[in-house]
View 1: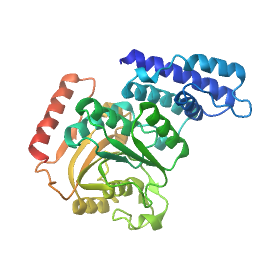
View 2: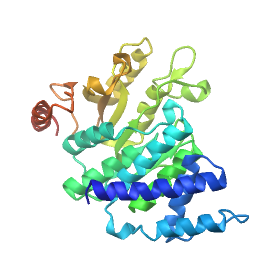
View 3: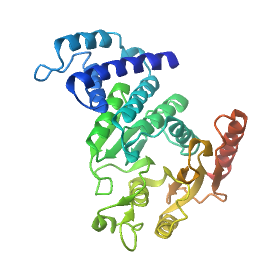
Length: 336
């Protein structure tokens, strides 16, 4: 559809969200959820205790009449919605672990999954830290575009607002996604899936008794939540299934990494660790990487040569194309 369609839909979302935010006296993200529900209802405005006021309803109706989701593809809708979420993050001053996966990073992860995961039509994808859903939907849309695969998504989050945003985003895009509101470290009701993805929150998990059930738990004190989530994700992934995780580049250089490494060696094959471009991060210590794991079982085997490296700057298209060609060649030699 092009960038113009993205910009037009974003403008409608932002305008109607701002109207509701002011009239209902709520946060930007809560107003974005409200306006999305109105759009999904065909422009019918939810009224509670006389709000929004009649004059605001009229202005909203004028905006909604200019939105036709039927004419828009899912990726156009996703991009416009994520721009609105970015506006909300700035307006509402969200904490870092609640902020959406940047589109640039989501696109790189989706590219790697497309190249390496070997997914088939009707396969299932799980994100245990779905947040607003932007990463999962980026992956689903790319595989739909490049390989014409219709995939089913599952997402877990313990934050009401994030999950509500993920829900309306999925419905706007007509994505087949089931969402669960719970602690991702607890026992889950999600099925065994073909692929797990996650932009992992970095920090300590406070419930030590629950963490002790995991091989990656700390020997003393609180355990790292991102270690536990990697293990949990792969536990709900089928034999030979892949996990792609956004992690700190220095994930294996902490004292707590010993239990993570021990578990990974026993339960999975570490197939790759690719640093994201350095110029995406103001502080080199905050640099992230994409960790690629594959469960043992089936025809899976450890790649003779683990995929290691660092994406070049996205501004250098020639180097980027060369790097991607190297990844494709690696896949053909090393992954069943």
